[in-house]
Length: 342
Ligand code: FES
Ligand SMILES: [Fe+2]
Image 1 (cartoon, rainbow, N blue to C red):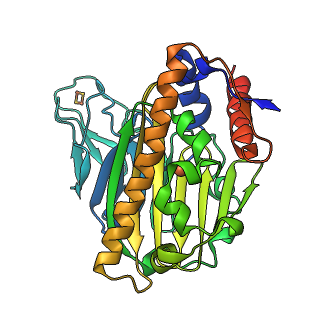
Image 2: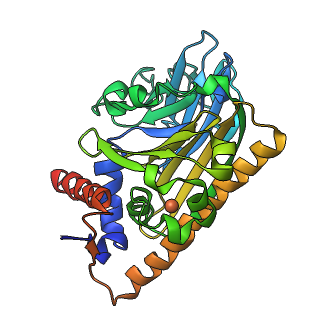
C-alpha cells in the first residue's frame, strides 16, 4: 500500500519554495481567457504562481507576454486587470518606456547609454488553446504542444470554447497547501461524501478515471443523470493537468481552472466558465453557482486536512489502491520533480 506524502511536505516553506522553481516554473499555467486580448492593442495583467505578468496583443496583432517588472528597479509596470495598451508601456516609477515588443525605448535622464535589447522586458512564453491563454516562465521547458500531450485529442468530440458564450469567473482562496487540493482533485473516493448534488448528478457506474501522459494528465470520463444531464449533457470530461490546470468540459459548457500555491499553507483557485448548447439564462446561472459550490466544498474539506497536517499528530497515512491510485501517482510526480531539482 502506498503511504501518503509526509505531513511536513504540506507545511514546510522550504518545500513550497522548491516546488515553485522545480514544478511551477517548468510547467505551463492557465493565465486566463483569450478574449481579454483579442483586439490589437489590448492587454491583461495578472499574477500567476507568484509571477506578475502582462499578456498583450500588439497593434500588429502579435501575442506577447512579459514579466510585469521594470528592468530599472523592478517596479510594477501595469496595474493588474484588463484594458488597452498604448504604443508604449511607461513605468510609473521613473518613466522608463518600452515598446509592445518589450524593447526599451526611453530611459529618461539616465546618462550612460543602455543596450535596448539587454534592458528589454523579460519575456514569458504564451500560447492559446480552447479560448484560454497559457504561460510559461521557463524558456527551456517543453513546448506547449508536448505539454498538452493527448488533451486536444481527448477533448476533440466536445464543442470548441468559441461556440459557447463567456459567462464569468470566480476565485476561491483558502488555507490549504496546493497539494492537499490536488490530492483531492484526482480521486473520486470523496465524491459521495463531499459533493451531495454532484453525486446525485453523476451516474457512478459510468465514471471511468484514467491517466495519460506519464500520469501528468488525469481524466474522469463521466455520464450524467437527473439535473446533471439537464445542465451538462449526457456525458462529460473532467481533467487535471499537473501541476495546476483543471477543467470540466461537456456539450453545454467549459470551465477552466488554475490552481496555484500561495506559500506553503494556502492556495488560490481561479476559474473561468463558458456556456452554450441550448442552456437558458437561469440554467447558466445555476451551472456557474454550482461550479463555485463544488470548488468551495473541495476547499472546505482540504482546509480541515491542512489544519490537521499542521497540528502535528499525523505523519503519514495510506492511499487506497482501488480508489486513490491517481493521488499516489500525483504524489510520486511531486517527489520525482523535487528530487530532480536538487
Ligand atoms: S523602476 Fe521603472 S523606471 Fe525606475
Ligand atoms: Fe471534489
